[in-house]
Image (cartoon, rainbow, N blue to C red; front, top):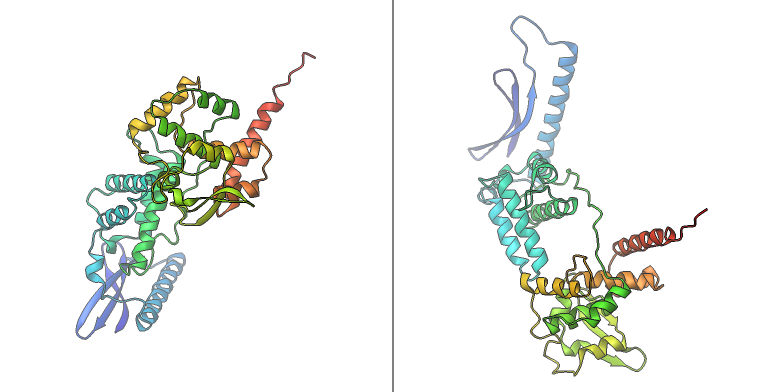
Amino acid sequence: MTVTLRQRKKKNKISLYLDYYENGKRKYEYLKLYLIPEAEKSKLSKAQKDENNKILSLAESIRSKRHLEIHNGIYCFNNQEKLKGHFIIYMKVLAARKNDSKGNFDNWESTIKHLKKFCPKDISFAQLDSQFVEGFKEYLSKQAKTPSKKNLSANSAYSYFNKFRAALKQAVKDGIIIINPADNVKGLPQGDSKREFLTLEELQSVVKHECEIPLLKKAFIFSCLTGLRWSDIYKLAWSELQYSVDYGWYIRFRQKKTKGSETLPISNQAHDLLGKIGESTERVFDGLKYSAWHNLKLQQWVMKAGISKTITFHCARHTYATLQLTLGTDIFTVSKLLGHKDIRTTQVYAKIIDEKKKVAANKIVLDL
């Protein structure tokens, strides 16, 4: 295959494109690079000539790169049918694979909804470029709205843009596109997330109050005592609860979110909370469900204890991490207990402790 750099004159500019020719068939790739044409009665200035030379040099380097890629089997036109496929439909397929995790699936669905608003007519893989990626990034950070017509939080925009980039990365792995158009686009910054938690006094208070769903109360308190996520508590089987003379009670399980294999020591109190041990194949919290109604009942239970914070089930994990650090457990150990792969994830909780120290320092005020 031969690759030739060609020019096509348009109104006030000269468009540069590549001409691919092989076995009597011809394909074109427009580079979106333009030269300044000479006017009939005036010549180009030195600056304009220099600019044209720079653009020609860039176009020629692209032509040379394509020539090498073709001969090395990296770049080809045998993928045209795939490139005609619709990207948003492809994202829906990827989202369906994430249906085993409620939170992750919802994030994918929200990303797709925003992508449809940004690009109502879908877009083919062949049309995806860095300009489109930059455009969607700007839309998420400046224009996208929540159902209540508010701007997206920094963390939501960060999460949705990452899902979008993950889909592009997967498209490269699947051989649909050769080059990821997001490779040279800087990601959105992550905002400081507010991790709500219960203090030890608040936790003591909710323990003393009745919950309309006793199983939900037991699971929430168990999470506060162990740091287990909802997904791991939901699937926890009696076979994963084990005991040894040296280590006492512990749980051997595989994290639903990270797929990492974990050994988590638990307190005697956490074990006693579970009650009578069932069959090894049975779920420990059999009957536990996730829904908006269950979330409401959890919030109502917390409010009965006189706590006005917005509490979700995941706040139990935050409570465990914060209490461990407050009571003197070093951050490395807390990181291991939570199953974090990177201690920087755990350091978010250390910031919470620093804030608590700051508040405590200002509690003593003298009338001087």
